[in-house]
Image (cartoon, rainbow, N blue to C red; front, side, top):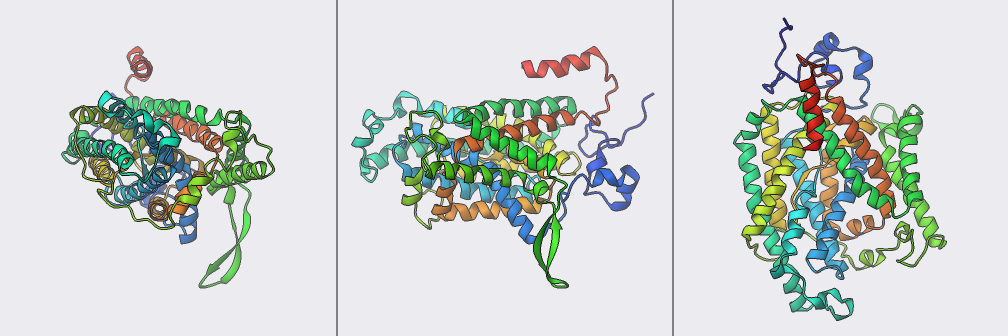
Length: 484
């Protein structure tokens, strides 16, 4: 007879306590001593409940923002095609600032009131496909004159009416769809489903999420494979081979005043350092005209001045507010499409919660935590629709991957990220500067992040206790999910 298993609060005994808690930093010290050795606990520099120094929270928060900004910025740029804004860089920068602002608010709500794990919120690609499908319908197709940059006066009432009516129907559809997600989360329906969802379903979900993201990573990296490969190499070098090198840095404390302490910079800031070095190299290659200046030539998108006009035209300060593009309207076709995207987002978020918990040293999230998390994501989509981002919000898999690289699982770092994104959203120049980071640098970073996500999914099976671990049925279920 199999030994009796302890419940972990999820109502699902597939997630057993024994063999899984070796990284659970949130447990009392005496309980950790009984369940794991000290070496396992030291795998994380900061656990989910730890509070790093304030300056470290800010630095790591910036790193998480840089990790997420690729996806956050890409969404309004893609939507601008359907909104007839492809030749209006200033409005695009306003959309970028708005989605940063709302993402910061939703991140704070999720970390403090929702799932309470170090997981960042941002725009979701699952709502992008139904949104673009809605905008491609005949009644919402862009007029021919909006495709010609020489015929567009971006300040004319006619042009403003064209893109704002399309944004308004997106807003209303997203807000209605978000009500369904709030109902599913806050009513506890997700928690009931989790009784039947174990590691055998969670692991392939996370892994397939990571694998599916490689398509976008490859497109970004393909704009200049040399720059993207350099970015990937630097992140791997810093996080894996230089992680044990301590760098002396000046610090201050009340007891010792100003003094020098040694910090493992390469371990906790590999992504930020990799992006910064690659960005600097691209800047040098740009000012010395090593990279081609012809937009049609290969490698042009590795330049740092391809979006310089956005930086110059963006305002210094702008406060986004609900209804800034007008009163939202509702389309039945849009609502149905958004509902499909919402369901997909819910499934991916559940997988992200488990990956985040594992990488941050927390137990698998219980049913009530998942209920709060999904419900709070629904509230985030409602806020995103009201503010007019043209999109919703969801948990960011990229930042879950960053937890595994930096070994910093403190949720206070994500709180700092939330405030930083709010500040970015209010200062238009800051958000516009981020657009100058070359696309290949973003692609190189994503190649590392998505690999970590895929590995985190497989690792969920590490402590899984299955009665028939070697049975053909178990293997069949695991193999069938990628096909489905």
